[in-house]
Amino acid sequence: MILCGISDEAGNQLSSQIRATLELGWKHLEMRNVEVPGFAKGNLHDVPEPAFESAVSALEAAGIRVHCFASTIGNWAKRIEDPFDITLSEVSRAIPRMQRLGTRFVRIMSYKVRTEDDQMEEERFRRLREVVRRFRDAGIQPVHENCMNYGGMSWQHALRLLENVPGLEWVFDTANPVFNTDRTKPEPRPRQDPWEFWTHVRDVSTHIHVKDARWNAARNDADYTFPGDGDAAVERILRDAFARGYDGGISIEPHMVAVFHDATAAAQDDALRGNYVEYGRRLERLVARIRGEKATG
Image 1 (spheres, rainbow, N blue to C red):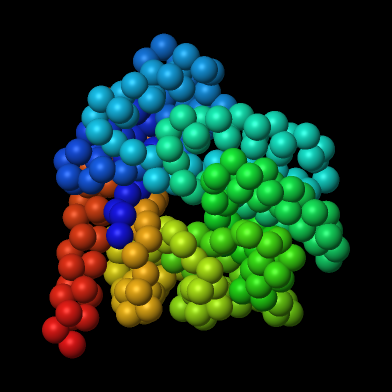
Image 2 (cartoon, helix red, strand yellow):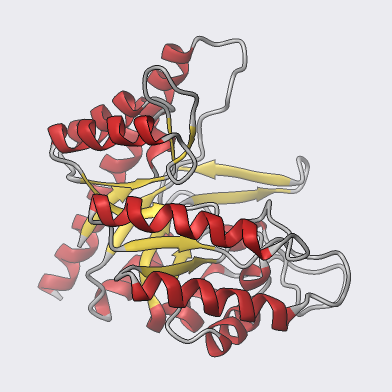
């Protein structure tokens, strides 16, 4: 089992991300956005080459490996109507960088949900088949996240995607069903059930995002919590995963620190890092308890 976390949840600056990882005694990160001195923050497949090389050097010096790359490929900000060349260029930039880092997994998505009934399924499937082929030919395993995208509309959509895109695997995000509606149901659509979604994709889930939340109807948004304190069935899902022999990556995504635009960069990173480390320690305790019970059960 590999414990890690989505890098920019521990701070925007790479130095903060590395410091948080070392404080936890972990050896891996799931890289997403990164900021190194002299360059603006960006996703790892978008930052300039000198910024990428600077990040590689810093990670190597700290003895930290990148278990998964949380790319923006096909994410909730990308429309299926947009030119496919946008996606292919991201794939082309990501592959050599992942190979340079020795990264095994890349997180991808299946494009933004359309407001129309027609979700252009066949075009989504066609594109993702090509994306998966290119990554797998390069020795990299794509994993799809149930987020605000086609594959996250319901567990039925997830299965349809998996059936039509051979070689695709899953990264299950525990909390995303808490705020995502079930698009197989009529209006007013209920929110998804994390446990139900998990049971349908667990056999192809090779990476897990631990995030926890409660739905706040007054705010029409989710309130994020420490792992096990919300409605994302985190403990139940991890208990089930371990009982079934899961030994893959578990990556934290706290989402708990508000972004204060008038705060200094250092103060913001301090807040993010502190929360990330506490979140990681709580996850460690939760995992140890579950595994201890399993060993003595």
